[in-house]
Image (cartoon, rainbow, N blue to C red; front, side, top):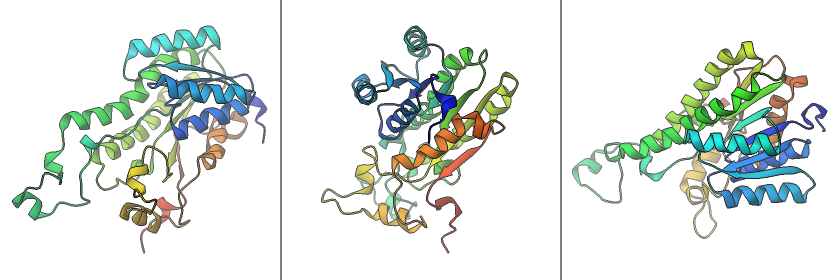
Amino acid sequence: MIHENLKGRVAVVTGGGGVLCGAFAKTLAKQGCKVAVLDLNEEAAQKCADEIVKDGGCAIAVGCNVLELESMQKARDIINKKLGTCDILLNGAGGNNPKGTTTKDTLEKIDLVQKDENIKTFFDLDPNGISFVFNLNFLGTLIPTQVFARDMVEKENTCIVMVTSMNAFRPLTRIPAYSAAKAAVKNFTEWMAVHFAPMGIRVNAIAPGFFSTKQNAALLWNEDGSPTERTGKILAATPMDRFGKPEELDGALLFLCDEAYSGFITGVNIPVDGGFNAYSGV
C-alpha cells in the first residue's frame, strides 16, 4: 500500500544502522520519504543508506551519538541542509549491555554462599553499566527529540515514533536495566504526547515483541544453530510460536506516521508481539 501523504517528507531514523531500524528506514523510503539514517556506527548507517538509494529511494547517512547534544545538533544541521527539516522522527537507538544483566532468572542462596565468578547476581550489577543502558535508551530518545522537535513545531502533520519493547509492559528476567529503561521510554512517550499536543506533534510508540536479530543472536541461538533455553521460554510464552520478522513492524509504523489513518491517535504504545502480552502462561 502506498501512503501518498508521506511522499516527500523528511524522516530521521536513529539507530538506523541496526536490523529493525534499518528496516524502518527502508520502509519509509519506499513511501517516498527522504530518509536520514543516523547511527553511532557510520559505516552501518552508510550501508543502509546505500541500499535505499540503490533501490531508487532518497537517503543519507549521518554518523552521530544520540547521547551527545552537540553531536545531534551537527546531525540536524547536515540533514536540514541536504534534505530539509524533520517531519518524522523515529527514535530507535537503544540496546542492552552485559554489565546491566544478571546470569540467572532468580536469586539463589547458594550464589551468595559459594561465590562463582561465572555467576552475576543482582548484587554484582555494575552501577555504571546500569547507567549506560538506561541513558542509551532514555536519554538516547530525549536528546534527539530536543534537537529535531524544534523544527517540527512549525510544521503540519509531524510525528514522533518511539521504539519501546514488551519489556515496557512486563520486565523480562536477567535484564533489569533494559526493562526499566524501556518502561521509562513508554512513560516518556505518553508525557510527550501531552506536552506536544498543542503544537500538533503526535507522539506514539511501537513495542516489538521478540525478533531474532544480530544483536540478540547469542542469547537466542547456540553456536550450532539450535535454540537456547531462553528461546524455548520465549516461544512458549508467544502464542504464535515464532519470532517476528522485521517487515511485520511496517504496518504499525506506517499507520502511526500517516495522519490519514492515525490523525487522532497520540500517546499509544502498540505491541507487535505475536500475542506475548496477551498470554498469561495458563
